[in-house]
Image (cartoon, rainbow, N blue to C red; front, side, top):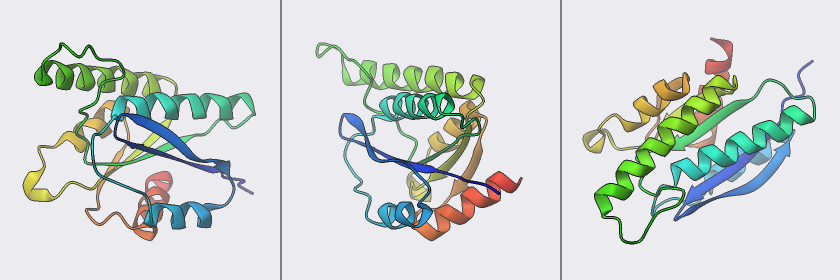
Length: 160
């Protein structure tokens, strides 16, 4: 019998925050997803780093199978640390490089990934698909990103 646990991280503005530590309450996570705040900057590198830390803590408690579910437009625009004298373009480049490096670290650590793309199709440049590739994970386009849809995508990815 599986004793799956789910944690919920939010990343917006300039940081990632652990909203729900690992718990067996998948229903609580589904409800939290439906009211998850969005908008603003996308500190994707901070989210990947925080997810890696949560996964490592889980491993230290004997949980060896971890799947990261990222709900994003895939457009990293906030680096972990940036110099205010850098141009906007330099910050975007730095953020993208950090995301690529951290995604590789998660992949190497054997952490599964599901990327849920919430970007409107007409605005997409394929960033979320690229993120899924860097993570070695599954990709789903769900622009509405409702909790039940996301839960079904994660179940489908884990069965594949």
